[in-house]
Amino acid sequence: MAKEQGASPAYLLSLHKLNDLKGIEKLQDGSLRIGALTTISEIERSEDVRRGWAALAEGADHLGSPLVRNRGTLGGNIANARPAADTAVPTIALGGSLTLRSLSGTRTILAKDFPRGPGLSVIKSDEILTEIRYPPSVAYSGSAYYKLANRKVLEISTVGVAVWLALEKPGGPVSDVRVALGAVGPTPILAESVRGILVGKIPDEARLLKAAGAACSDARPIDDHRGSAWYRIKMVELLTLRLLRIVLKRIEDNQ
Ligand SMILES: Cc1cc2nc3c(=O)[nH]c(=O)nc-3n(C[C@H](O)[C@H](O)[C@H](O)COP(=O)(O)OP(=O)(O)OC[C@H]3O[C@@H](n4cnc5c(N)ncnc54)[C@H](O)[C@@H]3O)c2cc1C
Image 1 (cartoon, helix red, strand yellow):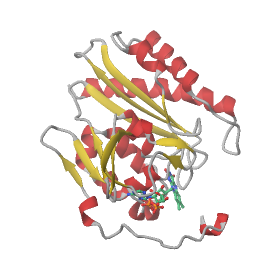
Image 2 (cartoon, protein in one colour):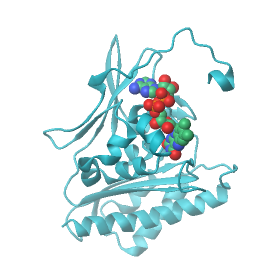
Image 3 (cartoon, protein in one colour):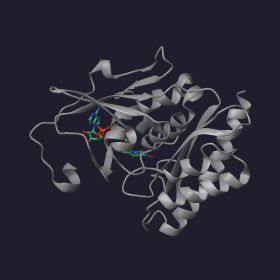
């Protein structure tokens, strides 16, 4: 910002040495707590994350380069509030929540309610993001993230899609689902229309196609140098369909 917008803040604070805000912990109730200063590399390497919250691990896998992943933190990637942020999109699909803390208190909000526009969020100037929590990985559930980009590494996504889905029982109807979309609007988007199509229904191929179509109706892409709005909408449909199939296969394989 200093270089590009000439910003000259009076103070620049580093959070780097706040060790309490680092680390990945599986809690007794089965939920996952990740300190905001945990690096993307640590998330990438965590077996717990990969087993129970695969979409987040896959977001971490595809963020920047090893150098960026070793320095960048989960809290920084989310607080940055970019529409393509590779860990924010899976965090929304996984139903993650954020703890924001200031001298006057602590509040918790759902990750989907955090961003307000490119680089804008509901965080107040006296708050920091301290931790990110993910609900327990329930039986017959699974998740996945896919980043579509013009290059395989060091590239911001053209479209990112994360899917979390749970079945009532093996081969049974969908009990809940969340599809989150990246880089197809001013913020990451929770594709709310998909729930109405899938919840309570057997996820056969026709249903999945309908759900993928519904995801497109929630996307608000623009044309830019990474891809046209038309292409992005097509990719939302294709990737949502593929990821729904992948998640269902993962659930089947884990039984
Ligand atoms: C070369 C390069 C490639 C990149 N590629 C990708 C990519 O492919 N995908 C992607 O999603 N991102 C990418 N990024 C963006 C970047 O890596 C991430 O957003 C990174 O995770 C930021 O983390 P950080 O800890 O360095 O945050 P910082 O850069 O230090 O902070 C980012 C913003 O968040 C605020 N902030 C940070 N931590 C907190 C906190 N705990 N509480 C409150 N506010 C906080 C800061 O004040 C700042 O405004 C790339 C960046 C670079 C430089």
